[in-house]
Length: 241
Image 1 (cartoon, one colour):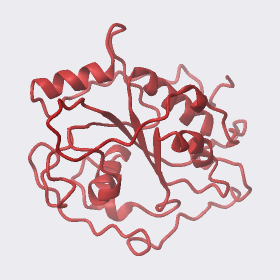
Image 2 (cartoon, rainbow, N blue to C red; image 1 turned 90 degrees about the vertical axis):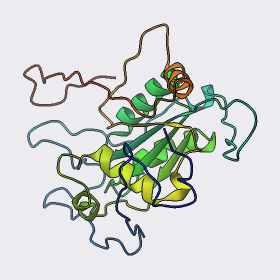
Image 3 (cartoon, rainbow, N blue to C red; image 1 turned 45 degrees about the horizontal axis):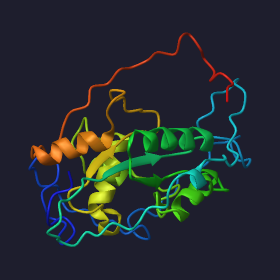
Image 4 (spheres, rainbow, N blue to C red; image 1 turned 180 degrees about the vertical axis):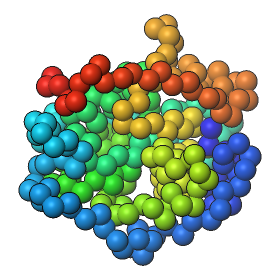
């Protein structure tokens, strides 16, 4: 959960009571080095994630179902005497993810009870197709896209973290920690996920139920076990809807 006081000062406790070192995150100054396009990867629409010899993965704008979701009301983060309903906020850092995969991931977690999603866009495609695909969700107040770090090196952030905690989710947590404007209201359940990680909850429950129980029982964090799936012998990503 986002702890009280985190909006007022960056030195607040996050991460199980440990204090994180300060990070001067100014996107215009923190890292001017941009990720270079490797030779042969220059043409627009080609993903940097492609494997040589495999069919090109589409980076075209993906249609979504934003209009099917009720527009979100801006949450009030001010203290209130009314009971606080824990909000579920998903945090995702991505780089050159196919828009269709990103929208599928978002829609799945909205169905599970995510109230809002914050995306850190580090992609290098010139059309910003993923962010454009997310725009209808942004318009409805369901998504925030932080695009100030597009195609910038994030190595300086990873190096500030302990070894073993330098994955995309940890980097995203550091960015949201250092950027007060991205921080969700106090009492929110923050769910950092990679764009290929899908939460699974019992069919008669939801992430909102989990957040409510954690809030009621004053549980600040939980460990989510992984279930990993192999490639089934596939070298290239199979074509599918």
